[in-house]
Image 1 (cartoon, rainbow, N blue to C red):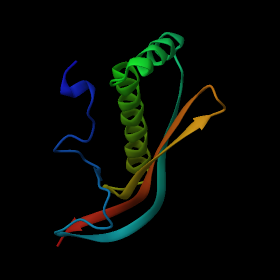
Image 2: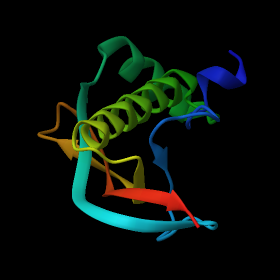
Image 3: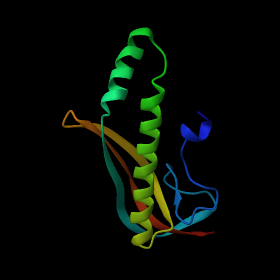
Image 4: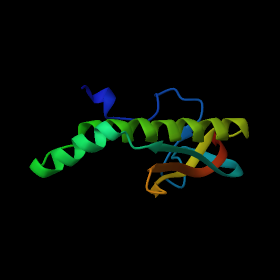
Length: 121
């Protein structure tokens, strides 16, 4: 498994910039649109749960679960960007992830932030 299977983030030329900061150096916020989020819930796969249980006895990274979580976070990010774009934003500021258990059957991942329009200073 290569780095592309365990990483995430945006392409360098994304039309909606997503940052974890309050502002973007060299840009000014010209309009705050409001909160946007992308949400996904993934159920647990029985095979990966059994494998994770066995692996946890001997230690080491749970690569199957890591890959699933990366895919889930990336899907939440894609949905966040779609929401921002649909509302006319070209940036999402203060992006965060929230991960919670969903009724003991899966994992909920939410990417959220503030949609805004930014322009170069």
